[in-house]
Amino acid sequence: MRTLTGQFSLEDKTALVTGASRGIGKAIALGYAEAGADVALLARGTTALEEVADEVERLGRRALVLTCDVSDGEQIRRAVGTAVSEFGQLDVVVNNAGGFEVAGPVLELESSDWSTVMRVNLDSVFHVCQAVGRHLVKRGSGCVLNISSIAGLGGVPMMAPYAASKAAIISLTRTLAAEWGSSGVRVNAMTPGWISTELTKDILGNPDAGEGLRAAVPRQRFGEPADLVGPAVFLASDAARMVTGACLTIDDGTTCYVGGPAMIQMLALGRVAV
Ligand code: NAP
Image (cartoon, helix red, strand yellow):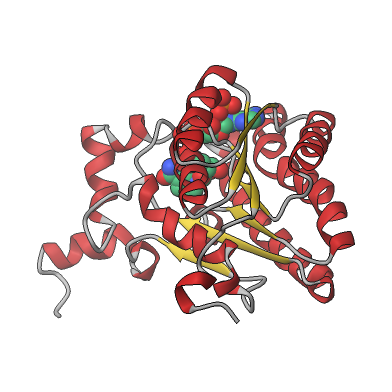
């Protein structure tokens, strides 16, 4: 058995992170490199990936750039194949690429809006899990970390496709943990709250919307990508060897408020006795 500190190390492991060119994926990829892993970096934009690859190499680890659109299952299968043949094997895979390219009230959405979000956020996770699962299950070790969202824990007006895709990721995570449990492959999910990234800058930076959303966070702050790195390293490491099928919420307590923003406003206005 390794020392407690050693159990958190990713030394000599290999990882693949989708959406690794910026934001949460970039932070996790660099965190994995710092913890000792070689990292395959996947996204559509090659230039930004190459910059992250340089940072991984400055940390003394090997980097592999995989230019790939995760909405295309065939591109995913090719990219996973390249990562396995270049690294020899994959130990950790993070399904992080995603976003909310389309938003609006359900009554105004086109069915193509729905499928666009599902293809990028959910179908991609299925395709990556299937491609790496064939490799991991055969080998009998490894783990997958799927980035869901607190949006997947409830309903989110104006963001139905996004919320549904993130809820389905949690369900898929649990199903795969059950299907692959006996082979020794672990599958977990994280549901982050609001994190300041390119994806959220217009919402969080909006003076009205941003302040309202911040008020709904018990700690009155938005997270940074770096806030997710420790939990992502833990779930990928041997320290989490008994953790599978779990969904770890990292949201500064946002989902602890039963009444949500309305309750906070009532408390602030003194309309609810405490
Ligand atoms: P971001 O800053 O917009 O980064 C998204 C990453 O995904 C980029 O590397 C992007 O690179 C890549 N990507 C997007 N579409 C892709 C595609 N079709 N194929 C391949 N790569 C693609 O977003 P983020 O805030 O870091 O979010 C990352 C993940 O965390 C998402 O799944 C998001 O839903 C989830 N999340 C975010 C928050 C938040 O508040 N930010 C909260 C909870 C969950 P390219 O554009 O070059 O492809």
